[in-house]
Amino acid sequence: MENIILIKEEIDCDVKSAFSMFTNNELLENWLTVKANVEPTVGGKYELFWAPDHPENDSTIGCKITGIETNKFISFEWKGPVEFKSLMNFVDPLTHVIVFFSHNNSPKKTIIHLFHTGWRNGSDWQKAREYFQKAWFNALLGLKEKIKNNELS
Image 1: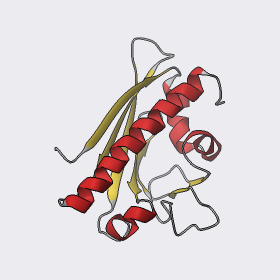
Image 2: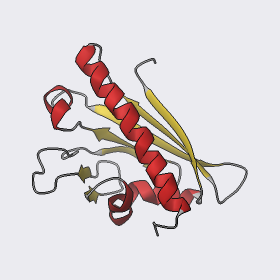
Image 3: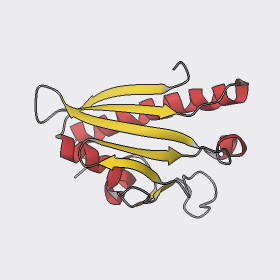
């Protein structure tokens, strides 16, 4: 359990909108990535590209959705950036992200629980895990701010 990344964040939108932030390509491109190719169905693609001109680097190319229930949760495989590519991107199984959505006392507020699992032991894996702990925390804070400032639709 100590290797699992867990981040909990409350955002100011309904559950349906929050779920869309993780499943709609255009919305993903407004807060998390440069280019998204997500097919929101089990077995569908969950490919995000931070350097679309070099899709083999800094992307989740080849990753798939492993579970989905509309407005409740989504789970998908995950790969690392160039600095962790040789470590993370060729293991079986890949690391795995699970995101749960629930409302909190108000239908206009959503709690996001993000779990990132599959971390192995060793100093290189620890560095990758620490990188993603910060990256997910900052990404969800960025999402929260964009929603607060009405920068997403």
